[in-house]
Length: 143
Image 1 (cartoon, rainbow, N blue to C red):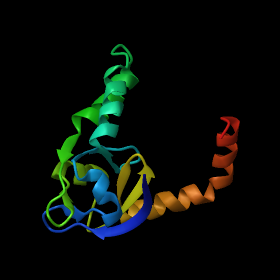
Image 2: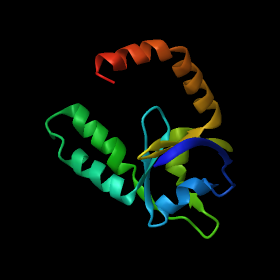
Image 3: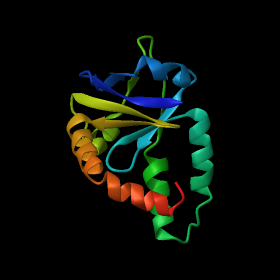
Image 4: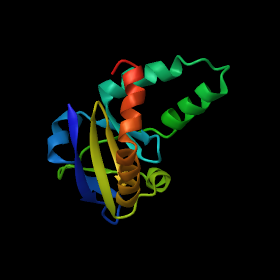
């Protein structure tokens, strides 16, 4: 399980230290790609494989399906932890997520999200202010 919220810094080469708690799950490698809400998603190889199979099975005739598959698949690249537990985030992904120096790494069970700190704070405040409405909608879905 990948859980928790951590603050880290990008170095001048675009590397970030992965929280120690997540490193064992990523030792065999991982995939990083564009996420939703202008963050980045990091998946273990196994979780990425399961998601990628669903994405390639989406109907090609539907524009939204094609667009989502492109967002996730074309932006994906494999990453490996270096000897200091860091990953290199490619420049195009850093630009997509607006990553500057201070970043937030959030564990969301089967994926990790990487956010620019200011964007995370804004998103979190907005979500916390809407928590009752969100809970009500999820209640309608049986959660």
